[in-house]
Length: 314
Length: 210
Image (tube, rainbow over the protein chains, first blue to last red):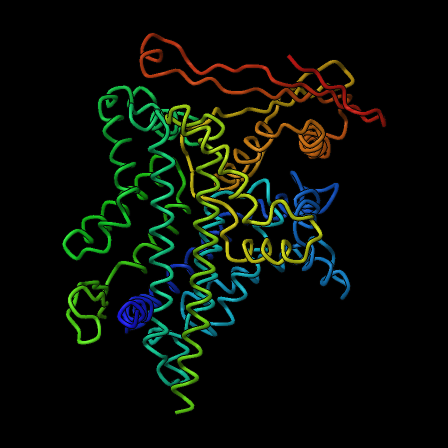
């Protein structure tokens, strides 16, 4: 029992440097910047109030209120801004600027914690208010920003650290949050891979074909894909196996590098062939922060953990 | 001594959060997988389906779905799931790629002129979001919700073209050819699903179904 407890403690609270946290902060900061810039021209159309914009936020917010009135939404920010005399459109523009500013501050590490909270909050408001127009990228942004704002910021690569010369953070706490991100990614890929394995279309390549020729993801001409049709089943099976086996091979030092490269290559391919650039970027940032540089997970013999004790070293 | 005790207590709090957080993620992911199996959307044979149908209520019950919508526990749980970004599973593009959808607006001017338009956005990033919206319209089995969303989209077209007499919205599902069919010359086609006629009068939209 005591041995199990010790193994659990060593697994959950490894001593880590904050390089991964720096990577996560810079990566998510850049991602928030790209997200905000990519939606600049459509921001007001997507999130406008009733009687304005493309779809508006009235219905998603009403449905959200039925689930829980406590989930943040753009309606709160608009209400606050209109009370102090701003118009709705000004309030929405203000939210966009705050998001852009928070992304910029995160990327360079100025007021890291406040920026992380701001970016998480405003992005969450947009993702929830645009319920019908939100997709996977919003989910992964929320996950990344949620962990980032809870992590021990600022990291040593931020301008905050340079200017204020703060005392170093608890390395075990830094390790704990990296472990949270790692375990979450393992679950994401395992369940994503499992769901794919349960469909016929990933084994015969038809899903890959359908994904690549379906608008608006059809960046490659079907005539080109037809020439590569024998690769489609191989590609489908490789994706299934890569994802479902991620939680096994990403921890082992001998296979980690190749799995990380393959997963990142898969996301690059998704970005380039389907136009899902933001989705690809956020997944690469999360993967590199979780299992990238300075990560070494190995079986170690320690007095407390005996033969099979698990430990991570930074 | 006090510091060590505080650190120990802090670690216990983090451990409790870790367990609860990942229990929720695993439950949600399992619920989604079980739902797919129970609704015959996977390659698993009938015995698995029967088992999944039995397990599904347990998974949904564990996430408070059976509690009243005003129940504070349910609300607190849903709030946490949303703020942590763990309110849904990870079965993207799985188990199979569903049919895409298309929405076309037929704009009719008072002089008899007819113009066709698609729901328009200014960027590729927003275009992906419109595709998500069309999927939502196509998936919903609740007719009033579908009509409301299409009506809202039609209203945005109307604001851009104030001189219109009527707007007809035609919603179709997309049929994609297989590689072999594509080679034989078959191209993407559309199946008519719904049409709605909107006019400036206060009358409700006239819906047509196949």
